[in-house]
Length: 507
Image 1: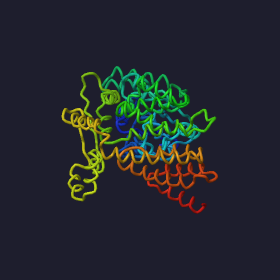
Image 2 (image 1 turned 180 degrees about the vertical axis):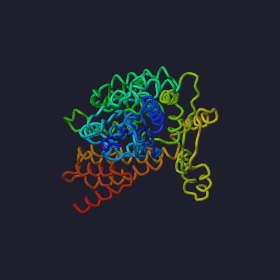
Image 3 (image 1 turned 120 degrees about the vertical axis):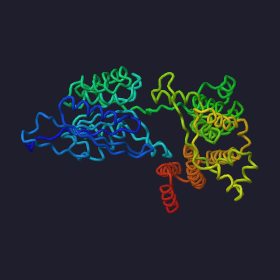
Image 4 (image 1 turned 135 degrees about the vertical axis):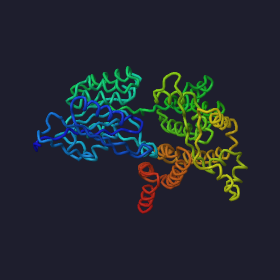
């Protein structure tokens, strides 16, 4: 064979459920129809959204084979610096391909979706752990010979098709492969599944990417499996709306409105009124001339989130919402009449079980080694099928305990922590308004459920202690901000420990 001849190389990175194997099968069929030798391999990624499956294909035209019967030697994995086309079905996967050296400015056309399916590290970050999509698009644009970016998930949703058809259309339109568009369509027809909708999505993607003219678009912040909102953030009841508008500065009204609506949905109107009573004392701390009511607004946000803490009752409530089931059906592309099975993977601990019990009983059982051993039988990993009558009724029964929430151990524990935070805010605001404002922002550490909540609360308590110490010192707010940034840097508290040690030495 001539030394100048080489196969066309294509690497596809796709998340689980996005049909990367389907696309690979279609491309293999297209290549053979067009008279090409083709080899396809795949390497599975890691579960829980920390990786993706890499599919690698090489194409060689049969007409260019030498007359002596020689055959090209095709690789099983992509070689950095030697990939013609990289296709990523999610934006961060494009960045990972860049890290692996698969994208080069002299050779590679990168086709990527701009939608996001957030990684575990992004979701579990104590602050806003989301990757900046503009940075990814900027870096990949500089690294690739040509970048084609489009929201593949949105295009698939619009046509009621699987994302695989959109991916195939983007490859047909932008990759520059020597295959006719009709060969791609025929591969979809031969598959015999949802042919009309998949071809419609293919054609739309083909037109959008034809010639590689699609400009990099801002990345969508939505995930392909679009979850229903946490809480039905409707307008607050008229009586409560009138009440907080009379008692609080206008600058805080938008935040208060969301907070009241959230807590009415979470518990009831009385609980939302308790929220307003707590905020009244904070609003009184606003200094004269502070028209923006910054402290009131910051505390209103944090307090609403903290008072709607995630306990077993809340988890059960969210998982049995009708809106959630509908959202899952839409994301799965289920049609009317099709059966969708939903399985919830739960991992309650003894602490969560005791937290749902009446306060006195919960405290005694949590402190008793005997009862802790007995309760471990009900703890650990559990799978509940909420599309079954028994599974749904089980979680609905737990959600129905909401009327008893104020008497539970978990509520007593959260109430104590909230009161300590508000007392510290009142104390510090009289000395250093900016420091109190920063302490209000630190509430964002207290979030989540189970061990995540415990780690965040432990970091928050350390910062709360430091805030009391810093009150009255020069630059106290900036120092507390650095502690917050350190606490958000990792969930093990190592960065916060180092920052606290440095602060102690400096002090």
